[in-house]
Length: 396
Image (cartoon, rainbow, N blue to C red; front, side, top):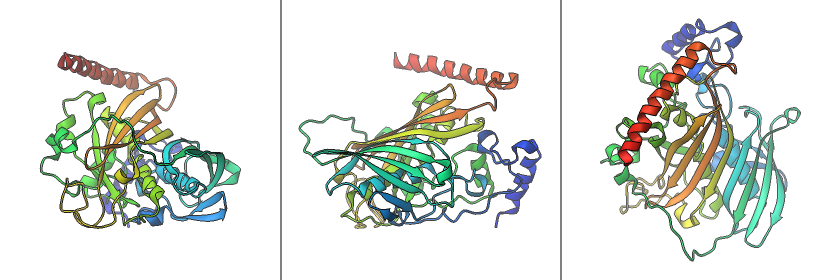
């Protein structure tokens, strides 16, 4: 049952949009339909090993079983969380490779929005089987009449020793001491279902409850003290994550798929917020998403539920699994698109994975902006130019 304050908010907001836009999304992701959507049964704390399960149709074709997460629940657009189809496509491909081959790179394109109540069907195409590397393409459909909704290329490799390596090592708790001092991941709230200003206000007012997120426990760090004086390009968002439930030790690719599932968590919302545009966009959608896994399997396992009394607070202290940290930034915004960049870290500061997303983000409903919209964008650009000058001065 939706609370009375939430229903009142809908009725108030409904009166400020034209009838033609009733079933669309307003600025900043605000819903403009007449009544809220029904609560979605996929928004639940489902263990990851249940979320990822696939039904086998034939040796190269698989079907989803669990319902996907719906960002925003009753306030959302009624579409699937993109990483659901992304990680399941990866796992479908895993069923077609020989033992010992592990995911190391995925590049996917979102073509159509994912429906919430229709199973995804994953068709795996074998491109190459090599001695050290193999390649798969996965095409995903829901309704045959609509065609492919998602496609990706997945590369697998066998483990090999490292003759040489160099990477930036990051002590998360030192580098971000202004926001992490004396904190543990569970000191921070779960990630909001939609990381947008309007949604935060409703949460804070008590009009809504946050939606349960399946598969992963994700904790969002309050970065205010770190970001407040920084240029949008220098702002960061940290999210700690671990699996809900333990994962089998004999299925390493399932552990990798859990990391891949984390890479899209509120991705474009975070970028819009870093540029102080989370209240103003009119359209937002993932276009292309790439993940590269850098580290050997030992650095990527979520643990087996055994408590650890040593190491950092990211180790398994409560028997619920080891934590990892995603560090998110927005590298560019303009011409109707935004670039999300995520670096992923283990408890000892190892850079285990990188993700990048090219996303659609627009601020007008037509090609030409109105005078009011042009004025707002110019004021925003002026603030960025001032911040850029200060940024250069600080680096001199």
